[in-house]
Image 1 (cartoon, rainbow, N blue to C red):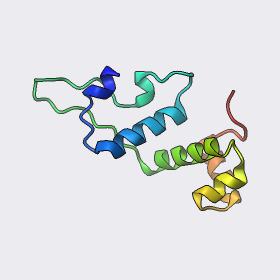
Image 2 (cartoon, rainbow, N blue to C red; image 1 turned 90 degrees about the vertical axis):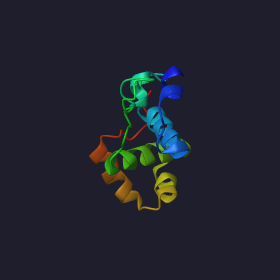
Image 3 (cartoon, helix red, strand yellow; image 1 turned 180 degrees about the horizontal axis):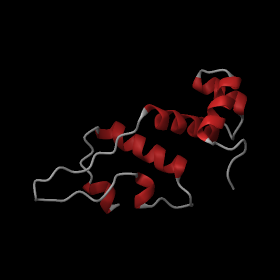
Image 4 (cartoon, one colour; image 1 turned 60 degrees about the horizontal axis):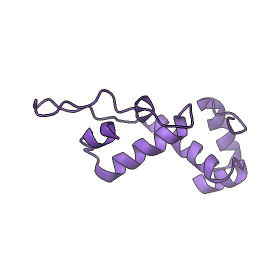
Length: 106
């Protein structure tokens, strides 16, 4: 919580939402860690130094969107593809490209 509160969030609520979505989608365990948030080191306070701002590239955002759609549809690929506005065949190709398994991780 300290790490979340001390981040400057230059992208405001949208950046916070993206960071949380990414962390939930990519977290290895049942609990989120500071590393899962991908925010880098905790920002320094009162020193005037700029805080680290996490940025995601288009591929990372696409992978997050796919993982979120799969999670929201209980890994039903047809419904997930429909939710994403793409063909199921495109979803399968993207899943292979990003190394996303065909069934949910245990």
